[in-house]
Each structure stands twice: as C-alpha cells, then as structure tokens.
Length: 269
Image (cartoon, rainbow, N blue to C red; front, side, top):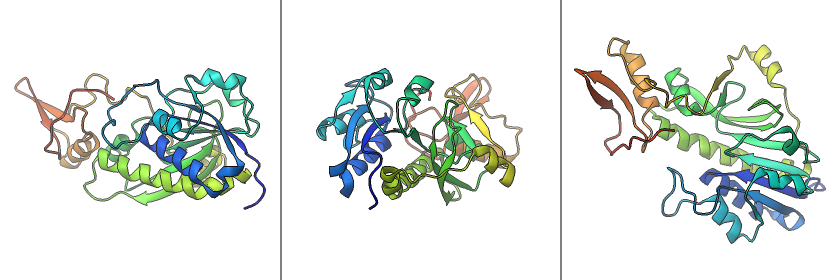
C-alpha cells in the first residue's frame, strides 16, 4: 500500500451497517498505522427497529474494539483529525463539523446518487419502477447527499423484490463498496465527479425524499382505481416489516396489503 495520508479518522453512524463498516476499517491490514480518534454513535442503550440478538450496534462495537465513543458530532470540534467517515449517520453535519477534517468527510449512502437523495430511497425506487439500484460513496459538502461521487456500486433489482429485501441488498452492496475502497480512503486517492456533471451527462432525474415521506397522512393509502402495476409496485415498496404496510380503505375499514405474512406494527419510519 502507498503511504497513508488519512491516519487520524473519525467515524459517524447509527445502524448495523455502520458497525460492520467500522469493524472492516479496524480489521484492515493497515489498521496498525491509523488511529480512529472518535466514533459518534447513538446514545448508550438506544435501540431501533433493526435491533435484536446478533445484530451489531455501533456504540457497542466501538467499545468492544477499545475505540473512544463520542456522544455528539459537536465533540468533533475539539478533535484533530484527517478524515471523517459517515455511514448512515442520524444527523446532518454542519459547516463547522465538515471543516474540522483536513481532508474532508466521506459519506456512504444506501442509494445511487445523484438519483436518490434523502431517506426511504428503497421504497421510492420501487414505487418509481426502477430496475436497478446501488450504493454510493461520495465526498460531503454542506448540502445533503450532494458532494462529488467517488463510486456507485450498481446491481439489478430482482422481480418481486420488496423494500425490506432491497434494503438488505443495498446494504450488502454498500459494505462491499466500502471494504474495496479502504486502501484508497487511507491514501486519500479519492477522485470524484461533480453530481451536476453526472446529471447533465447522463440525463439523470435527481429526487430528494424527506425522512417523513412515508409517514405523512395518506402516504400508504392505495386507490383501488389505480392500474394494477402501480398497486403492485406500491405494495412491494411499502412491505418493510415491522412498519405498517400499504392499505386500502374498503367500506371505511383499513385493509393492509403485503407480500409478507408476518405481523406488522404500526410504527412509522
């Protein structure tokens, strides 16, 4: 490997993929030459819809590896470091955070950019009838999911795939992308392409979806008068246990529509 440039790294995240990427970085052969100077994770004891036996949590993973755990991104303001890495971090970093890193911040985004910015991309991609999807590693700037693209790891969406299945697929693609890029991350060999250039060159339609895009009133309600293919796409797109699936209102009753026979909670995401 070439000479390491990014020796002092901070890592931010909040979901199982975050923990797996941290483990991969820590286990890399060059780990002896780098220092992970801080890991920003969810509060101690915090659990999400994904939590369960055998599912890694970022805080516990960092503690097991003997890494310093930080409670807030504001703790970065007093640290000296070369590079920041964000993997499914739960807050938006501001200018003062991004400018602390000598060589900037990277973000691992579980959707193709510039196509799908924001949240709930798996569901919206299925609603929109996409046939392929991907995970993106990109440089961060002050706008959400907006910095220069380093690489997108594309894959085809299998017929009949649900949003939960697509999430599993894109997280695996993201982990593979991250692991394969670790040498370039450590040597700071990370050329990127501006998203505006990709949009113009490839005619990409860039969409942004807010965190509450699937929990707004009526967002999961299906009109029985829609074309059959539209109904089926939305059923697959909203089939994401443990969250409430798509439904129709028939004679005033909410009838859930799902390809999964398991129970669904009424939580929102």
